[in-house]
Image 1 (tube, rainbow, N blue to C red):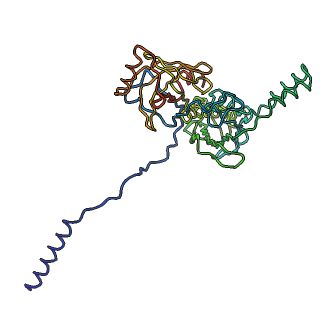
Image 2 (cartoon, one colour; image 1 turned 45 degrees about the horizontal axis):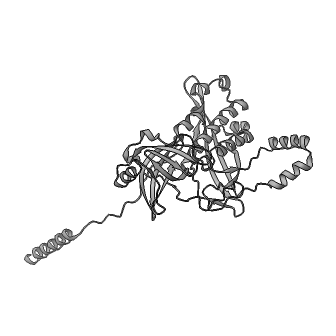
Image 3 (cartoon, rainbow, N blue to C red; image 1 turned 90 degrees about the vertical axis):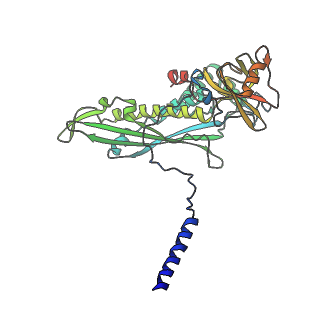
Length: 379
């Protein structure tokens, strides 16, 4: 019995010793989990320079430090490495996928693809991130017919031969998925519509879908563009009686067209964040700055831009400015200087003279998103 107790005691000592020397190792946690967000998308824009705090003055993603050394300044034959070169694209819009309990109803209504396509072409061309080869053949053919009538076929043919036919380098493809469902309350019902839009840039010669710009998925609901009360209906004995005419193709098409238009606005606002306008700062005098490019690089009026110094691959924020473009240059004012040693040095150098950045420590400006004035008046 004594040997039995001694064996138990020895076992306990061994176990305690092992336990005291064991350290529990947890695997590194590098991921998070969350439910997919099905909420409606919103328009995204850049904050006004006047609303920036010091901590907000940071260089955003996708900044560019390419200068104009490689540029030929020939809009139709620009060098590949020039930051002013805009990819030549053609836009395609697909609006034929449906789902939901009332998908057949939405399918009958469809979308006015051609009209929406032309609207989107106008918006994309206006922000000057791409050159758009239009599919508005009706307008183009009408104008050519008018010119032939006024100048003669030979003169028009010569003009077309000189200018050549624009060949798109890429395709910008929009895909949509539409959902239609009826929700019933105690006394009436309401139509619930949803529209999802995705976009892709495709190289038509290699059939490769490019990773940039990555716009993501855009979701728009019917009550984002129409008042929910306008989508309420009454049924009697299972048949439509009054209110929103959910069985009328034109009514349904009107809602979906408005949803698509809002989706385009959201897409454009994201595009301006994914492809920010950039420029090189030529000089600083006091709080004033000048840029080497303007509207030709997509700089918009009242553009909020981060000013930063670039040296050997490192970036140093200097301040935040509000910038207004001319056709080929831009002027702005640094609204808030970064609270840093380098920013104070630049500000001091520009206090009573024009500070011209050295070639090895150049200053650049990069936009932070669609300006508030653009969101208010253009979308």
